[in-house]
Length: 120
Image (tube, rainbow, N blue to C red):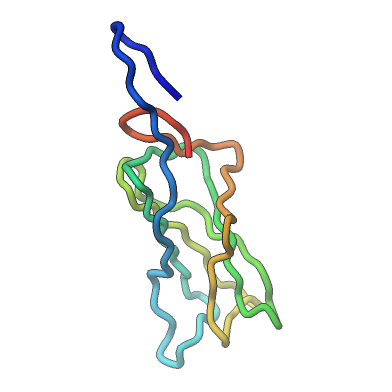
């Protein structure tokens, strides 16, 4: 896409997710249990702004509790966004947590680049 401003063309890039990590630690017994917070950090190719409450899907022990949503919690204006899920009964994971591929949902919000305005 080419943006035209003052007679000069500029390439407009769309921010992309370059890394995904679970950034919270499990309890001493290596489980996420009642009251724990699962935090996921998405790293983007450039700084982004956030409006609304985007979510990412996490897999909480597929044999027992299945897919849960981690909601946006912080990071607007930077290249790293944090999403959080509060573990509630009976929603614990004894076998680990995984972030599901391609699961970022905007839920009516936006995640545009801070520099170009192009949306993720």
